[in-house]
Image 1: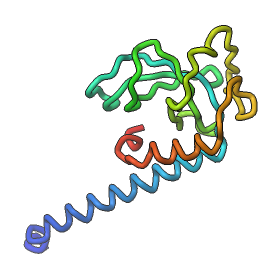
Image 2 (image 1 turned 90 degrees about the vertical axis):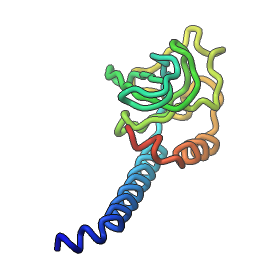
Image 3 (image 1 turned 60 degrees about the horizontal axis):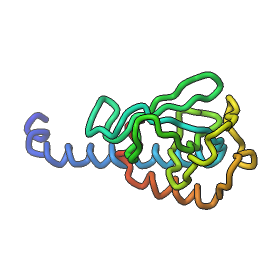
Image 4 (image 1 turned 180 degrees about the vertical axis):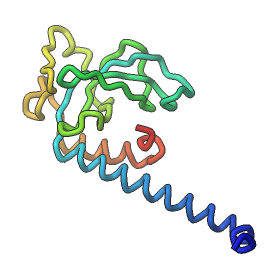
Length: 150
């Protein structure tokens, strides 16, 4: 048995790597589907400038609040500390989220009242398009390693 394992070690490692990648892709797609099934929206804020690597990964650290709970994540987008942006999150599992950097919201931030449980699609106080958001979230998460780290 030891001889078989040592002779086939590279094949075993390759198979395990492929299984891990496939598992990551499946779990990412399930997260995207859940996010798009019951989305809500809120405003997030960058808590760091862009960084190469920390415990969470590459990009910026950001936070957003839902029902009094602060969620902190890292995303590979370009913002500066203190910048604010639109977030779409899963209303069932608010930790599942994506930054919608396709929308510029700085003109709307003055006197903006953000509900503690987020906006429903029809309640967002500026124009957004559900089809654009769906395509953006699906395309953004095609890079599985960026999203698996959550």
